[in-house]
Amino acid sequence: MMSLSRLRLAPLLVFLLVFSACGGSSGGGGGGIGGSGLVSSGTIDGFGSIFVNGVEYDTAGAAIEIDGVNAQESQLGLGMVVTVFGTRSADGLTGTADRVVFDDDLEGPLETIEFSRDGDSALLTILGTEVIVERTGTVFANVDFAALAVGDVLEISGFAIGAGQLRATRVAKTGEFVSGVTQVEVKARIANLTPTTFELDGTLVDYSNADLSDVPGGTLADGQFVEVRGVLVDGVLQASRVEREDDIGDQARDGDEISVQGTIANFAGPGNFSVSGFTVDASRAEITPAGFTLENGVIVEVEGVVVGRVLRAEEVEVRRGRIEVEAAVAAIDAAARRVTLQFFGGSVTVDIDARTQFEDDTGRANPLRLADLRVGDFLEVEAIMSGDALLATRIDRGEPDDDVIQAPVEAFVDGVSLTVLGIQFATRGAEFETSDDEDVSAAQFYAALEIGALVKVEDERSPDGVADEVEFESATGLDGNHEFESREPDEPDEPDEPDEPDEPDEPDEPDEPDEPDEPDEPDEPDEPDEPDEPDEPDEPDEPDEPDEPDEPDEPDEPDEPETT
Image (tube, rainbow, N blue to C red; front, side, top):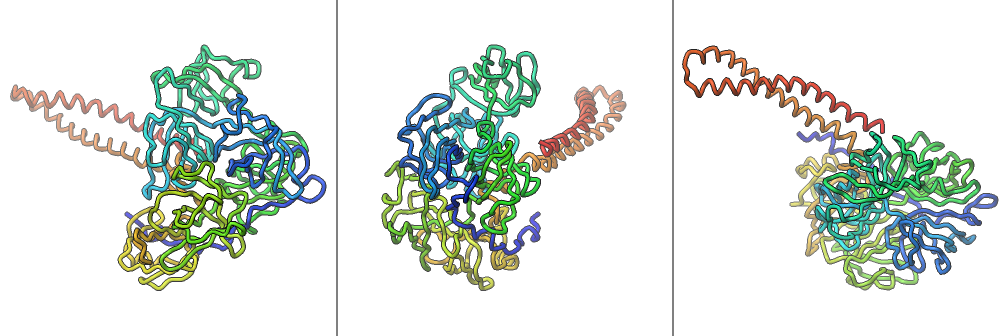
């Protein structure tokens, strides 16, 4: 049963949503970002040549590698997480790439798909790895978010958010699965190694005929992080090649200037956490937004210098925002790099910079640029606050849909209306939900509402300034975070479903089979059917085996995922 305590959201601290612009700095003298020996890792946010971490890199003379094979720039795609080796100019806006490397994180058949209750995210399972995708936060190629289907062969690029789990920045469909034919690829740590097999995130790998030449000494060991390629046959990955997987931290040299984007993990404090294979010391770094509390799961961009395999951070910047605006374009100011979206009760203007990622779901432009936008286009915008202005981190052009604003509440009249981004919405007749997507009454919603609470307001077509749906949203978690991230620890709570094994306490109903002790009565009649029922009590003797289900206490082992 829903608890109203879960409704109440503390007011958002301003720094949670008022993010600074991610323009970066030159890093100053000495070891600042901007000299030679630059390594930059992050998503491709635009082309011409390519934009990575807010820098436009000239790739005219660069070597392009995709999955270890020489390739062309035209084969690179929006949302791919790439590593750029090269130099950056003193102003930090342009650079020259010597080498651009892309290696997907996962490729294989979609085994299961679970959509979130609000329909804005989904959890995919591919080769035992869980992948969170977002309707507007993930780039899709050759497939749409709503069209994802079991059996699709998908290539995934993204950021690790825990053992066996990724948040996808790009999902590309490469075909349909054919057993024993479709080439698959997975990266994970070896477990349960035998002379011929091992497991990766629960997928059994037969490496008896695999090429191990890229494994040091040709010797595998439990705990090694490897990349495996091969084909699937009856659920077993028949490996053709096993390679030791190096991360960007293994490729950087002492003194290299680094700009790396990824998810914070292993957070022990500002002076000790990891991002994309680097151990980061941000104890003296400028954190933007100022005062932001770093923690596991936050997607950031870290800039600094490598010293003894530790990245001494000069800047740590948050890369994903929680403000969302979906509406038709009312005006475009190309010179100021600014777009205005129109709502029934007013308009919202967003700024655009080199880190803004453009995607076109209409198929009219590839790649999509600011110059391609037109008045009347329907845009889905993710943004952060830069001072008093909204800065777009993502712009996705799509087909007309409901008007949506997700932002902190600025004002409200109990039971009547609320204001977000300067636009007032009447709420009489609206449907209200908690951040858990549970229905509540208007009275319950307003009782929990506070200034600064993050809410999502939908004004369905045709918009009239009256909200049709209003729901609380998580202030820090991205779409899918609440339902799917850190799912393994939650599953142990699901073992409350294993408390369904307490349903085996229904097998305690087999204690009713103690009634079968009445079967001594069956000796009375040869009423055959009743003796058959005692035969069924023999089945209850099987429930005595369910006393072994006391082994379901082993489900407590899922607590082990908490230690991974």
